[in-house]
Image (cartoon, rainbow, N blue to C red; front, side, top):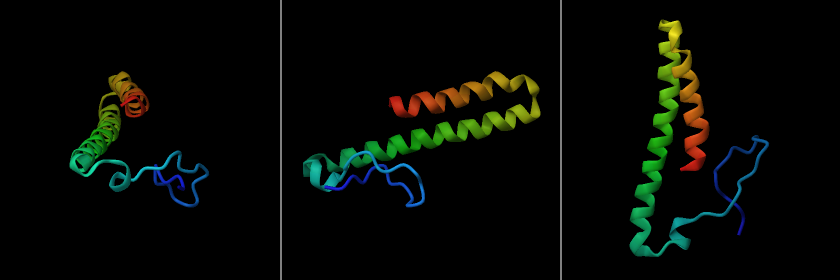
Length: 83
């Protein structure tokens, strides 16, 4: 089977790392849970990305927000792969 995850554009220099197909690899009774948790993880990753945007906006308003912006980047880089 060809590696298909994470889905990346053709122009991107990196290629997918592993094969993933919920319909093939997960028993039918658990597929809904796996999809639900995957979408929850996507929401989590999106929330951390939104946190970077909000921290940057805070930095533009108040120059004391450097640590907030820095931590938002650290959280994004650390917590997404570790989750």
